[in-house]
Structures are given as C-alpha cells and as structure tokens.
Amino acid sequence: MIGRLIKKRLDTNKLANVFVNSLLEITENGFSDVRAMILDDNAFISTPEIPESAEDKFLLVVIVGNLRYLDNHFEVSEAKEIRSQIVRKFAAIYDIQEKDFEKAIQEYDQFINRVNHPSKNTLYGMSKAVFHKFQLNEYQETYFKNMLTPNPLFLKRMDEIMINFLWDWDAFFRKHKMHFD
Image 1: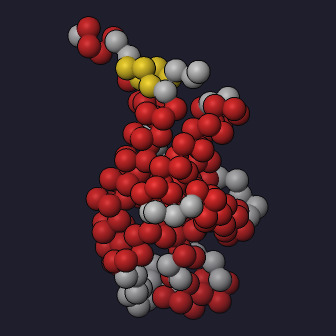
Image 2 (image 1 turned 180 degrees about the vertical axis):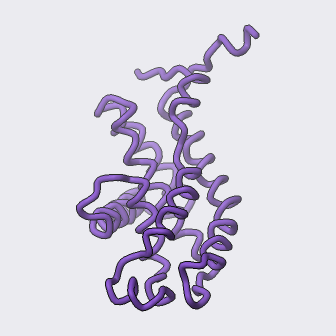
C-alpha cells in the first residue's frame, strides 16, 4: 500500500530511457500483430505485401505520434529537453548522428501532416501514415483506390490498433514524479 503512494522521481534522462525502451519493446512485440491484422483485413481485395523488415517504418510513425503528445503534458521548455534526450537515445541505438535522426523524425512528421490534412488528430494521422507508408492503396477495392484514400472502415480498425502504441501519460504520472533541474 505505501509503495503505491510513493512516486518514483525521474529526471528527463531517465524519462527518455523509459520512453525509448518502451517504444522499442512495444514495437518489437507488436509489429508482427499489426502486420498480420493488415494482411488479414477484409478492406483489401488482395493481400498486401508488407515485409517483416518494415518494422522501422512503423517505429518511426509510432515515435512521431508519441512525440507530438509531449507538448500536451509538459511545459514547452521541458518538452523540448525531453524530445532532445529521446532523439539522442534513438540516434545512439541506431548509430547515426542526432541531426540525421532528427531529420528523419521531421520528415515523418511532415508526411503525417500531409496525409492527414486537414485533420489535426494525431491518432488518425498515424493510421493514415501506416496506410501510405506501406502503400496499401494498391490493394484496396477500386472505389477507394481511385480516390487515393484509405477505406474508412480500415482506418477505424487501424485507429483501434494504433492507440495501443501511444504512451499512457496518465498512468505514467500516477507512478512517477518528474524532476526538472
């Protein structure tokens, strides 16, 4: 009982570690299920071709979607510091320069904005990004294929999947107290 009342204190570095490791774990454990769901979805008239190696594309969509929520839960300067730590850690994991990883994040963010325009709903944008990054349009029925838009029923099902890849900030703040220097 007392253990539940004591919150663990985290700084931005520790938060970034937890965040990065959690996103990597959930993506590594969940991508095959997402891929299987897409391959079996009845919105497609032929089975999409999604290589198992496409996990990195999926991870980038998940990272961008989650980074977008930082500003909703932190002050601007805090969110900027956390984002910087997250980018630093991902760059180290993938053994690339921070500026190159930041560029990849920005490109994916712009892509999500473009495919999701005019909507500002991040979850919906993530689902649309998955649709377009995996080039699923060519596997749809003619009506949606000609419109170059995802079947809305597929997007609804994809939203229900993608919500599982969003960081639960409420649960996080129940367990942890943030400490900023």
